[in-house]
Length: 263
Image 1: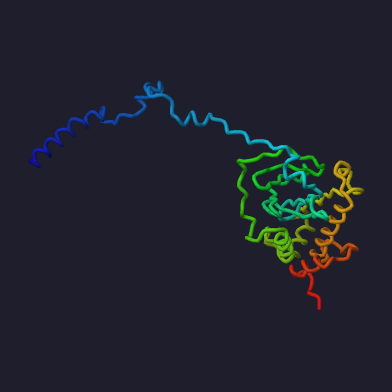
Image 2: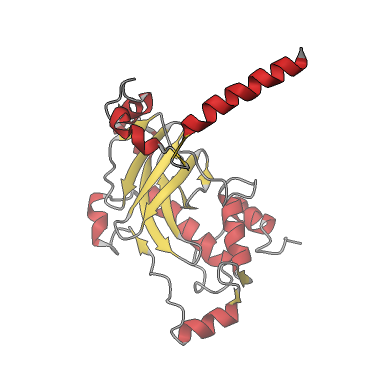
């Protein structure tokens, strides 16, 4: 019985194989192009999927968004990238802070910064909005937002961790692999271009401030924060401002290792 089945199988193969070859060559699918181009089975479903437009993100009135509580007061460029200075006008006194891209402070994340246009894209929750040095912000989008990259986060959130990273950069410049002295030598020789100068939005010092006047409390908060940054720089940014540190500011600098503890 098994031998009979093998014989039948062999005979079927002998009948089929010759039909697959013409003059000793295998038949090509190009012979069927005239049939395939007519699409006898209809269009491929994937073609229809590509034509479907993406749904537009809903817009939120800026006056109902988180962006109304912030003013952009500075933007600066360094080896690490572009950082943006912001003022939270809802705190008493108003609180200022700097963010690099993907940094987060009290739920506010800097998604993108444009030094040339002096504007920044911020996110809080599921909302995104542009803010500029002129105090003008765009319509806010909600939902369907891009994910924030975690490549620049080291697990410790908040503005203190961001400034601690800046403090450590004074010892070594991680992006170029140069020490501070080597960087200064190459910069003096013209091998490395210096970072663009910072731009501030302070009344009396910048004409752009006309449309974004800071209150006395906001100016006080800004200069206090600027003084803290100067102290952290250890002389690289000049001498500290003639402002007496509060107990909270002193304790924060001690915690960061910038100042020695009081005896």
